[in-house]
Image 1 (cartoon, rainbow, N blue to C red):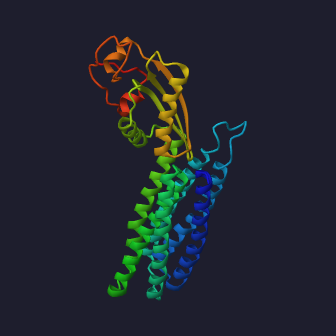
Image 2: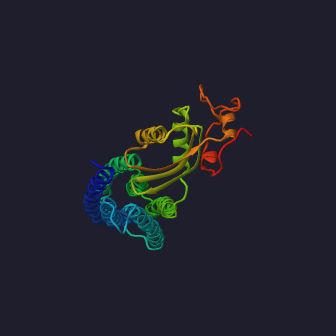
Image 3: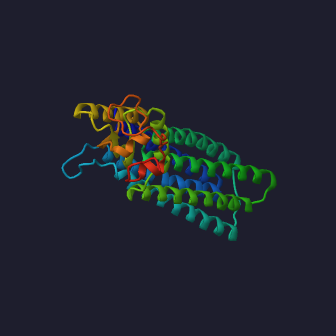
Length: 328
């Protein structure tokens, strides 16, 4: 099963669970008349809508390439995540508005014990599904799944705060806590929405993923072959669950075409073993020049002009540069 198909299956689970939990929270609000539980239910409304939007975006992203989309449809995930983040942000603002309105016009709460039981159940399920969604999203490089996972977990944190406030109200009879707790966790929800929007816009604009580059540099430094004289001009673009990597690999100039291609295949194999099969490579091979000898660690070289001066440790900065490395 491909990453795109696996992502689609996970999102189907998320959408189905969101509908069930939304119904449970509406029942809890109807029983208690708590504004905190109502705001939790409002956020679940966002979960339901966003869940189905993410499901559609993952369906689009899983479609094969065609003439009109030679790089595939993976960018649909970024659009979906941006929309979901916007809905989370707006839901947080609505919660703050409702909580302030309830402070100005308080009303009596009912059957808080039943409401606590029901909402606690939804929190446990939300956290488990969110954790699973995040794990799969990070493993498959799916921003849509990561956004859904963060959304579900932010929903869990706000629900925990609501439960704590409801329990405290049971013992203290301080009804204002209902609104205070709702405002506190609405701010957390607003911040979560902002972060998702920020990540999705970075993907749409092909912003460099520094964390991904650092991880790749660490892997390549550890498994570097002696024929890899230099690596530079590295670019990584994400299209949903697919990574596109462009780079220039400097190899000894006297290698024939097949030997140079073998080194490129070894580079591709290492990256795929670490980041999954959904990686595309566009590797340009450069032949080494005389100044390359000073950074070349090839033990037996019939064409060496200079002794090894130092081994250049690759970093995010120097592999991203379009300049070949020297010993300076």
